[in-house]
Amino acid sequence: MAVLASSTSVPVPVAVSFTPSAKFQIKKLSAHFRHQILSKCSITAQSGEPNKAKLELGTVKKRLWDAVPKPVKQFQWKKAENTLFERLLLLGKKALKWSLVTFFIFSSLSDVVFSISTNQELMIPFGLLVGCLLSDFSRETLNQLFPVTEGQGQGQDQERQLLSISCFFVLVKFVSACFAVKQRVFLLHVGNGGLLQALWPVMQVIENDKSSEENSNSTSNQNAT
Image (cartoon, rainbow, N blue to C red):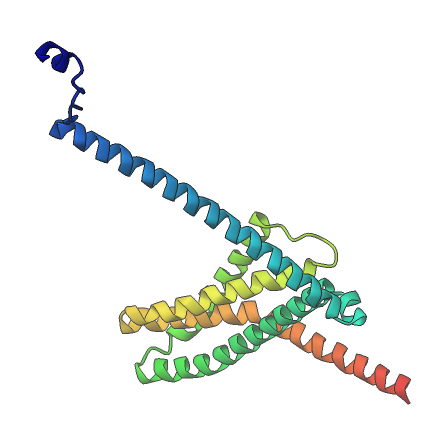
């Protein structure tokens, strides 16, 4: 009986035990797989959102364009933009011309008064002469470095050179404040001479523009009548 009982005994299941290092490896692998799954899900969600937003923006843009009237669609917006840009440049150039002329008139008067008050009257003609010579030299140098192209843009190129020379002599007048009285008076009148030599053709251009505008207005009024 003892032999029979021992032969028919049911085997007891053995419990599996893991070491701490094995448990740590299992947790690490599970966390790694969980992170990969979540990252893939987030990437797919993010990639889907921009495409959907692009499609919605495209449909809205198409509906708005369809709702725009036909004359607005056929309007030459690029040409209007170029015309507006040219007009703004022309207005800016005119404003710069008049500001330089006004600055020259008032600053030259104040410089003469300052020279008389400091007993430096002899510096006035000498500084004006040096300024005129420097202005002519600067103009010739610019013509050699940047030759003026013949054609429709010749007058604009010359006018641009004269305005740049004028701005240089305005800078000379401002820099003269850093020197002593005698050197300051000399540099002030050098700037006045350079401005006079550079702005004289610019003032002639302004007068020509005025005459041309008056002629065009008179002809338009005659055609209207």
